[in-house]
Length: 398
Image (tube, rainbow, N blue to C red; front, side, top):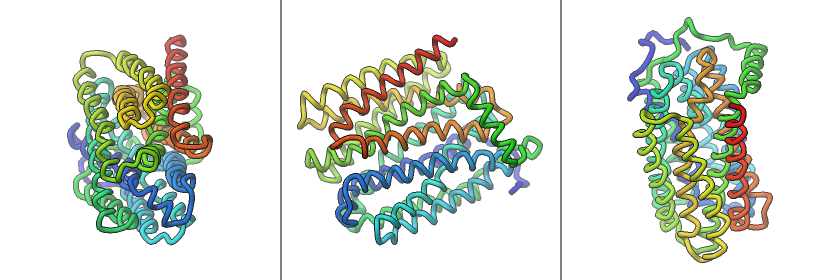
């Protein structure tokens, strides 16, 4: 999988390619979010069954990164990306023809396995070439590109549903995967020199992961990242059922409501992009923790006081997304800063925490509570408290 192309890319090209790779993950979530209630009805399952299609996807996404990262340390970022995104396209096509919920689970698992390359490889590509405030700036640019997908995907999904069924949504995902394959083939350069590659040896891989997990400098920012994304994916799994089933929004109205979430994330990334060269990553995290506290309190109180209000749901969501914009690049850069020699493994492990948090958050939201609204007002405040506790423990350690 080596390449004769020049090694390395500009900051802009790295951000664009990395952002589009990462965007495939939320595309596979938000594009079909408006169709979840319909999917549940068509396949004769329950709301819990519909939410489990998210959990299966997250489980594969999280676990496959632990394979993808070391493979990229051995064979390079570009070649491994081509293989994994081809697997993603196959998963999309299987979901398209899935006749039962069980087959949809299989397709979603394959999708999650393939799309894992997006997070692991984009971070490794950044770490291969950039460090410090420059790395935070590029990771912030990647987040900005990432926000375009959840802004467009629910609306696009609603339009597709007007003229077709949920099956066609997976064809759109397959098309996006094919576009990523073309981009990697024609526009990407390898960022990992042959001389820097690590052997793909189970003992070496295990040793690298033990090194990461034994390092407080890695584990604390990764835990904070995982908890924040746990909350994000928790309410991602819940919002279709609250806004469409409980509050009676149409799929298109649901997509419009999600613009609050997207606008908040875009605004947060713009602010972080400006601040990243002016204040430290630690200060960015402090701002994020204040936002998480406000959001957690909002989730606990506002839906109870205004049970019929869309804004009572979406206002805490928007504040949480602001916090996510502040936390994600800073904690990712902090976790990977001391592990340039094993950037693929470090990127994979941070991705494991991030997506593993999403798996736990979506699974808890779908199985531990009697209904979606109860899950929202209990789970999100608890996650906010846990995230703040982890950050305070890290500060005490320093």
